[in-house]
Amino acid sequence: MKRLLNTLYVTTQGSYINREGTTLVVSLDGEVRLQVPAHTLQSIACFGRVMMSPPALHLCAEHRVGVSFFSEHGRLLARAVGPTTGNVLLRRAQYRAYDEPATAQAIVYPIVLAKLLNCRRVLQRALVMDAYASRHAQLAAAEAKLRQIIEQIHPNHAVEELRGFEGEAATHYFESMNALVLENPSTFFMRQRNRRPPRDPLNALLSFLYALLAHDYASALDGVGLDPAVGFLHRIRPGRPSLALDLMEELRPVLADRLALTLINRRQVLPEGFVTTENGAVYLTDETRRTILVAYQERKREELTHPFLNEKIPLGLVPHVQGLLLARFLRGDLESYPAFIWR
Image (tube, rainbow, N blue to C red; front, side):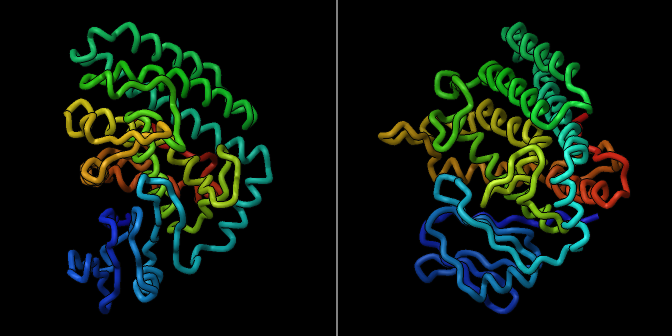
């Protein structure tokens, strides 16, 4: 089993990453702030005005450390990875699957089903907690809607039909999100899911977490030899990590959504941790971003029993495991793709 390596998040504006031997050195205004051996890292995420020297990029390529560059507000701008070492036959099988509707359908169905089951599980857990007793009716209604949609979808549905079910379920799920917010509900209130840019603090928080998760999935998929850009549920588009977006759907409710609600309900993120610009866009402050990054890394270390492997693994390894399972399906080693269903 792959070891869960660290992700280095560089958020301080003006930081510079250089190489000293086999170590990456992060400096600010000429002062060394951090030194990290490259072999201990899985990836690096740079936010905003963060620079990196060519020798440091070379070191990352040598050690298969993926480097992603985000805007200061969390929008993915570019990814840099080393030479592709994955089996070319696996990538050819992936591209063929994309062109074969039946195979694409066989991949999309379990992904959508797992996402809906995991969203429903989030609501079911809230329904048995005393803290949500006063919101029981609202949550129960949303849970019932998801159950109805889950009962409707079928492996024979075409990919376009599965997209429709997924979209309908997402609408009901996000409409129930406000009922899961216990602290500062007037600030963390979502009228609808929006992004690019997010228009309220809850959407801004979710968008930032989704960007982190997509970064982790893209790195994991590249690591197992798959092309993160060629997906099946999300349409392919230049620069879009469609396969990473596909597979992260399974883990979004479990990791990102639950973490966002925990941060709000434990008052680890507060209304003053967000800034609204003149055009209505809402962004996280540097302090809030740091709080989220620390919590995200801690959450990834939590262990769970993987439903298919039936063994305990850190939550942060789920992207790698699901990438491997998809690769085994594409190679013909598995009869179906076992999507991640949260127990």
